[in-house]
Image 1 (tube, rainbow, N blue to C red):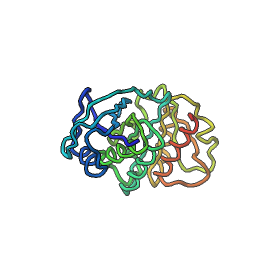
Image 2: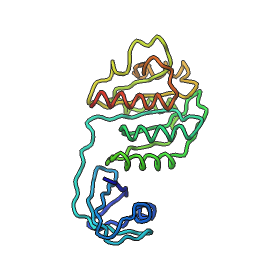
Image 3: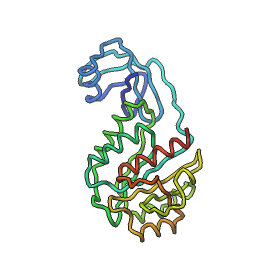
Image 4: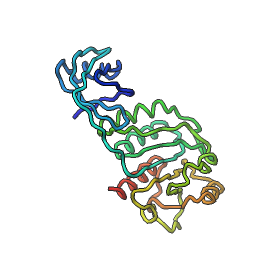
Amino acid sequence: MQLFFQQHISPPTIILEPEESKHLTRVLRKREGDTIHITDGEGNLYECKLTDANPKKSILQVLSSEQVPADDFYIHLAIAPTKSPDRMEWMIEKITEIGFHELTLLSTMNSERSFLKTERLQKKMISACKQSLKYHTPKINQTLDFKSFITNSEFDDFEKFIAYVDENHAHHLMDLAKPKRKYVILIGPEGDFDPKEIQEAMDQNFQAVSLGKSRLRTETAGLAAIQMLQILNR
């Protein structure tokens, strides 16, 4: 199944935006009468008939719809942007395919990049959602400073973890995380978290965890954390 994406759908008629219309008609060569599947990223899946194959404004008639249930767990990844934007875009693509729910970019003491265009990350994420048939679009937040993030009362009912390089970690993430919960996990920049930041996180009840014996790049650590929590909830 090929999946298309558009926000704010109002049946019974859907007018596709130009980018999706062009892909539908010029790349995939869909014609009037073809069946099209589209999601709004809020868990709604629509089966439609293409009634006007226009590369600038295709028109779909909704035939049926279903609400796809959300996961019974929640993964919030908070990660410092990498120096290379390409590496962060790669990570977004892969963790979307695997499955996550929210991402916040962190500004830390050792951050080499304090700003990243979230619009590009959103485009990568939506493309990955369509490719991997995800009907709930994850949320991507703008960059937030480390201390403001860890002191947010929103996380009071989350399992809270911080992963950093330390050969003496007592616990692996898989040892401490419990299934069917809400999780927030902190991943540091290339230079890792400053010891002061690690202590501040622990003072806010974040638990120190290992992601394995290897020393991982920032984007690989983010990917590994998402994969582990998905395996826990399989």
